[in-house]
Image (cartoon, rainbow, N blue to C red):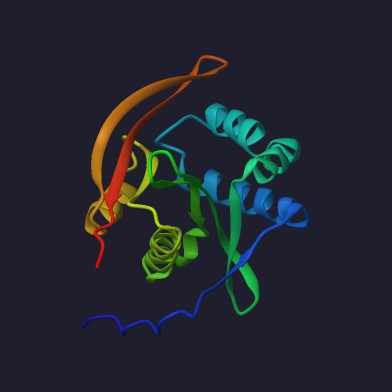
Amino acid sequence: MSAAPREPVAIAFRDASQADIDTIRALADRIWHACYPGMISVEQIRFMLAWMYAPMKLAEDMQRGVRYELALIDGHAVGYLGHELHREKRALHLHKIYLVPELHGRGVGQAMLAHVVRTARASGMQAVELGVNKTNARALAAYRRAGFTVAESFVRDIGNGFVMDDHLLRLELHTR
């Protein structure tokens, strides 16, 4: 007997402001501790959360042009995006795309990614790029299904003896 199909989930997006930094940080802490153990150490998770999600760092990102958006279901934040336009490369760089684990596999992540692609197209970009941990098989499979390919691979020292061992994925946006 197969499971009953799940109802589609209605998702909305709204721009985040500095007033939403605590919400973004709380979501990041919850999501990272649920999703990254086994890919990176708990120590690295803590280090990266403290580094990438410090209130001052998020505020600086927003001030320099990184657009943060909250993904909302029934008015509740269930995920977030962080992206910026790299006009010289004609690419939208997706810094962050995260969703609470209980909504994985329900099409919400796909809806978030489709929103990013629409944003890139509306901004006249020719591609979407993002970095993904090389061992994040679930995310890599989802991006491949969405048409992303590996543009390059890199290892970046982030301090404290930790590295980011990632693939840079790219989706070419063909004009219609």
